[in-house]
Structure formats: structure tokens, C-alpha cells
Image (cartoon, rainbow, N blue to C red; front, side, top):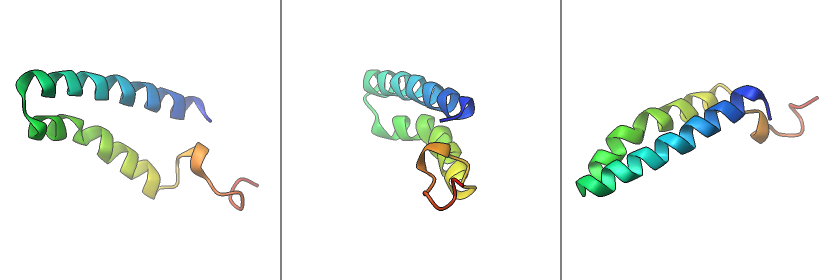
Length: 62
């Protein structure tokens, strides 16, 4: 796992916890989805670019 992956995971977890607390206090699931969507889009972008080191297949690691 690269430093970029570790940083992205750390920020994602912190952002998820903050948006969960915000969504729970506001009582709205829609608010949770809106505020967490940047993280989902970021990971979707990295997945489509095959830029996530810890899920690469064995064929591509060589």
C-alpha cells in the first residue's frame, strides 16, 4: 500500500465519521449522501484509473 493510499483512506474515514455525525444530528440521510459524495467520487475515479495499489490483480503487479 502506497503513502497515497494510506492518506486517502485516513481522510476518507475521518470524512465518513464527520458526515455520519452531521447526518445523524440533522436527521437526514440525504444530507449524508450529499456530503459524502466527494469521497465516493474520488474512490470511483481512482478505481477506474486502476490507481489503487492494494486491489491490483497479481497479473498487473509484476
